Length: 87
Length: 194
Image (cartoon, rainbow over all chains, first blue to last red; front, side, top):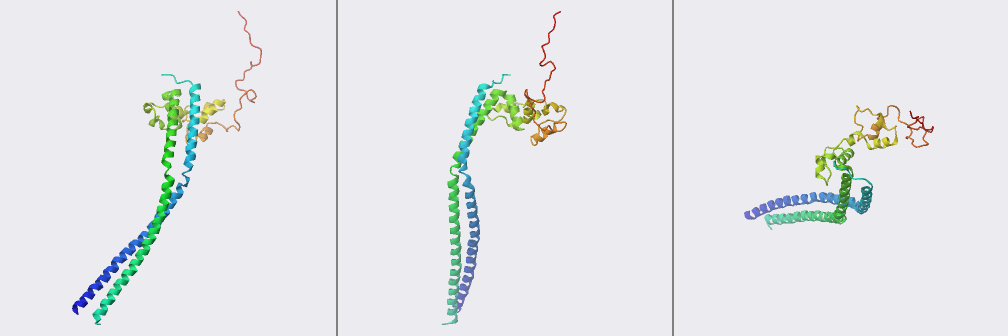
């Protein structure tokens, strides 16, 4: 009988330890949820910020046209202006 | 059943109930985390997809701009000479002479002439228009005319009186004719030979 009560005491200790450990696990899991939600919000905002990326194609085309125009002007200037005299 | 047996059963039931309660809550939280990570992965996938062509496009833009810079620098040096080219660049972008021209490393050793410190582009434009240009009224002992931050205000300060309310009018129909000479339009003077 005494041994039985000792076993009950051990079970009581086990119950307390189990509750403590599972409380820690549950609190850790609850702490992750808000962080994941913030990360999801940041990723969605980052994705929305990149909506303007296709405009880069327009920029690319404009740059090509501008450089072509500059090259044409440069070629004309090269023809109509004298070169600098050597010192 | 002895009391010890009842206590044992009660403790075991309590342990099982605690396990069920905490594990169920943990499972719910892990499901919420899983759902949040799904949203994160979806957004990150969009980011990856949208940013994929950026590198190629930016490289192409940079290549084009590099070619333009090289061509313009070469043309500037060819037409103006190294010294004046550095002076012009330094005049437009004060301090740029220290970095020199990209394709001409030797330009870093050139002392830039004071082209940009004396005349602003607006002043030079006015100088071409005639005598009302502020260049003619500036004191040579005064400060440099160039003021990169307030170029137009500095140009207005050059007028000793009020700024003219009109632009200079040039040409044969102008109300004020510069270089007026009394002998213009008169018969040509002839000098008798001794």
